[in-house]
Length: 244
Length: 239
Image (cartoon, each protein chain N blue to C red):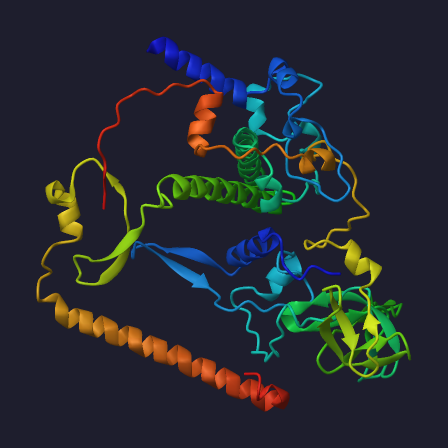
């Protein structure tokens, strides 16, 4: 079962901070004696994550991007994740099935491994034609891609439903079969790090120590408890303070 | 009195500074040990160094191995549920550990900028900040629970709506003062008893400006919804 509730927000804050840094500059106006902010109001998301250089280059202050209409899909309704098998519904690779390699929620995009590609020749010169590079093109999850139903091997519409135990699962509307989460998606944490690929670092806390319960409820505020433990006695007479 | 102060300072230093004696005394505490974790890798600098226990000013910098590295690995922030099971003393110590880590990260960022380079893995700053915010939330919860039990009030000073010197209504948080409000000259300059009538004209204009802005936003939302339904007809009932 996948946790739909986000347990920490640091990645979002980090992305916002990087976007804020990259959306513009403050230019000092001599003689006028003031700062002029040259800032972009709208950030356009693309296949690169917002903290990467490529994304920042695409959002350079003077670069214009045309407005894109996006179908709003809430986090609870999002049904396609990394590692899922999907069927492509449009384009040159119509009818083919592939595994999702990347998901970009800000654009409702999904990249399928090896399918729906564009070909480009690089390092062309007068003597040689260069090399051909194949890169995947994005697919819209609302119209161009469908999750494959394992029972019949065809794409189908998917809904989030609850089992008898209370787990939230994806169910194929056509057959009613539960589509489980892929191992890659379960292995990945919220900040796009692999759980199984964890390597112990010097600075990390042991799981045993993490789960150790040292809390005992006491009738005291935090400050009083710490003062007591550090043997600090504060007998000073408090002056009357006014709160307004 | 001086003796008492000195002992207080010594006891605080025992809590914060790295020393072998301190470590051996508090060895049972989870926070101070080198750790392994499969599922939970946490943002916690080690207090157990084999080279030398006291680094002095060099604690403001990262370990030499990480200088010039492109990627520095770090764990995830502490979650609220993980902090709630720790006692006050542990939270107090963890706060200072995180504070030192934060200082180290900002020092390194400044140093990297001086060398015209980028700090590797700058999201570490956000991780530390989130852990610290979570600690504050947990401590606040505990204090509020105690206050509610003993006094029936949360202990939050609260706030109220006041009319400032411009005649505009604003929400003001109650702050601590040494003198009562009727003796506070500065307070009366900010929040006078009677605001002059000349401001009424400007308040009306300001409110009109706000109304226009609000209507502009509502209109843009309406137009956006219309465009979405035009492009995605199945959203007609949802939006």
